[in-house]
Image (tube, rainbow, N blue to C red):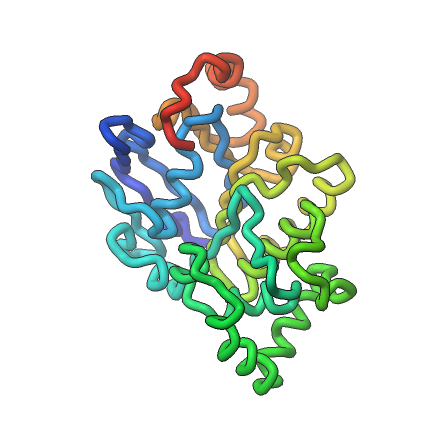
Length: 267
């Protein structure tokens, strides 16, 4: 497998003079589950936003499968096989589970991520879904794999947090991405729910999808990620095999100091 799947060199991002990321270098290997950890304000979500095109870097480059993508619009990045979830569990309340997942296949990513999803805008896409059996079958098959068939016609408003996260992940993989970025996929979950998410992610990874995930859950990271990168104040302070990195004193010192960190730095 290629070691040049995702390459980041000198990546920086400033917001009003505050450095959210500072000259970051990072390699993600194809086929890995790569963890991204760090205290609040470390720059983790900012990095995901830069990779997916929601933000543009102040400096530096991002190369995905041999092609520079840091100046491309989100929809072009999506078309190249990069998909994501959001920390706040973005689900369209006025759509069913099936329709929420279909959005991941039928709508341009830029529209979804800018919250321009309204029932009237989606009508033509949902009508297309009803008309094209092949597309509908694909959505239904993916829901079955992810264990969502029984709730296909429930409204987004009715979903509990765990269900919302599973729907998010399913929506992100319906387009058959090469690279899946997950922002706190197990936040607020108990042990049983976390294990179910872990099982789903392992299956997705084994199907050929490279994964990078942000999480504050060290047990989850230790269990699922082969390698991790640790950010603190926008800088990489450690990287390598999970167990080795998690045993480093400076990594735990970064976490112990979270309460006194500048809340103005974006995460």
